Image 1 (cartoon, rainbow, N blue to C red):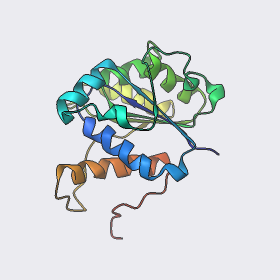
Image 2: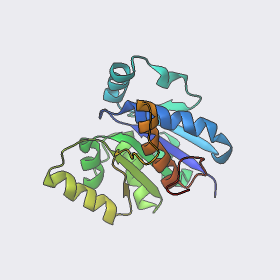
Image 3: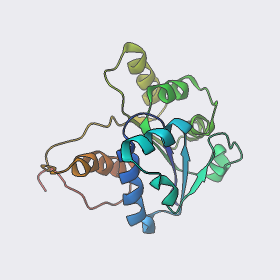
Image 4: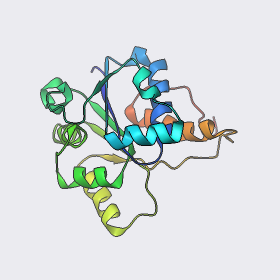
Length: 186
C-alpha cells in the first residue's frame, strides 16, 4: 500500500512537534508517496509565536487552505491512508469526536475514520476534563489513536528539540514508517 499522508496542524501549543515531524518526514521521503499539509489560522499564528518564523511555508509539501473541501484527502476515494493532527487542540479533537466536519481538518479526519484508516491525534492540552476524556474515548472506539504529546526521558535528551523528538519518533512509529530512533533497552 502506498503511504499517502495528511499532516494537520491546529492552534494548540506545541508547534515544535509539527516542525520536527515535518523535518523527519523529509528525511523519510523514500517511504512516502504523497504528503499533504493543512493548517488552521491559529496554527500559523502559534507557529510564528512559538518558533519565531513562518518556516512551515518552506516545506516541499502542498499546503491546503483550511476551507478547501476540494482537497483530494477530503474524499475517501483519494486513498490517503494516514492522518496525523499535531498538535491537536481539544476543540479539534471534540469536533472530530462529534463528527462535525466544519473545516478541512475535521472533514479529512472524518474521512480517515469512515474508511478505517489510521488517524493519530497528538493531543497537547493539559489538564484534561471529563469532556476531553470522553471525546478521546469516542475517537479511540471509532478506530483513532490518541497519542498525547508526552515526551520520554529514557534517551536522556539534552535539548528541547531532543525532548520533543521523543514524541515525534513515537508518532513516526505509529504511522508505520521505519525510523532510526532511540529504542528502550536497544
